[in-house]
Amino acid sequence: MKQYSRIAVGIDLEPDGRRICVGSRRAARQARDLASRTGASIAFLHSTFRESEQLPPSYHKPGSRELSPEAWAVLESTSREFTDENIHTSLHFTTEPAWLELCRWASRDVADLVVVGKRSATAVDRRQIGTIATKLIRKCPVPVWLVHPDHKPGDGCVLAATDLSPVGIRVTQMAYYVSQLYDTKLEILHAHLLGGTHPSDSRADELEAEIRRDIIDSLGIDDDVQVRIARDSPSNAISAALADFTPNLLVMGSLSRTGRTGQLLGNTAERVFHHAECSLLTIKPEDFVSPVE
Image 1 (cartoon, one colour):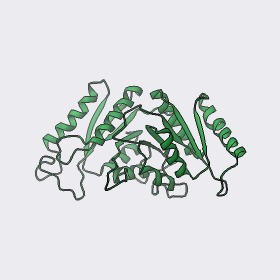
Image 2 (cartoon, rainbow, N blue to C red):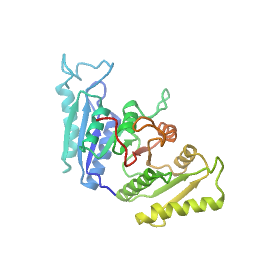
Image 3 (spheres, helix red, strand yellow):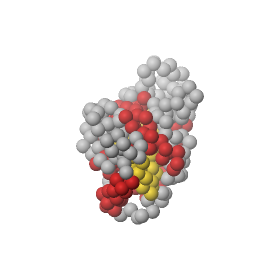
Image 4 (cartoon, helix red, strand yellow):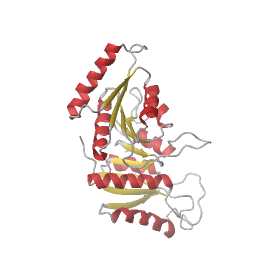
């Protein structure tokens, strides 16, 4: 499968402009770990765009949208952490919304993987996917890795949720690639209801054989990979698998088959993404065309 060599990382500062926020620091660490294993370069992007938030003087230069020297120094310090490890890095900032510039990078082949931080659930708001991440999931043409702030690179297994479609095969290929990078276990999940009913035992056996024949065997994966055929709706099956396997990373497609390109999250993705207590890696169909030029 394709080797990822250009990682784009969206990084944000705390409101006071004096330090990197927790989610961005975790995303940067994940990108560094990936780059050290693959030889990829890292391009950091920070956006000064704010729609309504009032930021303190320490963040912006007076009378402008440019970063203050103090805020820029924090970003440069973060970039240097990775340069010291012989990883080629670059630091960029934009006055455009971060999601928009990252989508442009991906469309122009500046990035073939985007890594951003995932929100933590709070008592007030249990939705863990913010506006920027949601727009990236919908519109970015390359895989988007949302890093959970409480997880470390390489911990736990990798869970691939596949529907046996072409994008489902890409999901499994990417999950296998990551599991090999980290020498960790791969779990494959497929949920299926026939005509609104649960499949029979024989049909479940046929589905598992189909997964192994069309996906696993073609990748040369050994028989230690666990395949679960769930007799339930995809969202329920994924929720149950997340509880059983407690993966560090969930890999799945992000768009509805019936939705307009780049516009709608699939129903299953919408239900799962906001509540999954792990990192997420979202995959688009091979023929996906981003609405962002």
